[in-house]
Amino acid sequence: MKRRTGAFGKAAAAAIVSLALIAVLPAQTKAATLQETVTQTTRQRSLLNDVDTVSDQVSILQRSAHLAYGEISLTKLSPTRASIFGTTQAFHTCPTVELDLYVDKYDADTEEWEQWRYWEFSADNAQHLDKSLEIIVQSGYYYSVRGYHSCLHGNVIETAETVTDGLYIGITDSPVK
Image (cartoon, rainbow, N blue to C red):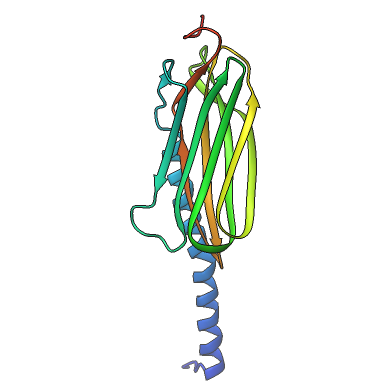
């Protein structure tokens, strides 16, 4: 016995397939973003003693639809104070522009970076978002800043990450072990 599918059955099947594709595509984009995040934040960071500022910038090489670039910096102000700066820039006004700033502290015993502090910022109907903070740090350690930059437009989110090298902030030029 042959089963016949009417116009309603074909339309329903097409709708189900469309919904399935819509549900799968954002997950693939999210997975790609997570992979990019892991790659960027695990890169080797140098430990620098002889500079007062470290920075990083990512420009989107292949023109994206919304996100243009992100930038961060960390500046030593004194043996116990630092300034951090971050910016997210879009090509045009987006419903949501985000910037997350993370300060990492280097643990010399484990030779690992540990997240020390973080801040999340967003701006609605904006083309860019800039933030500058002055923070108090514990003297005698290396610090690094990571930035998460994103633009949300419709159901599309474009992201990028930045990370600085480690900057020694303390009284002497290098840490005492």
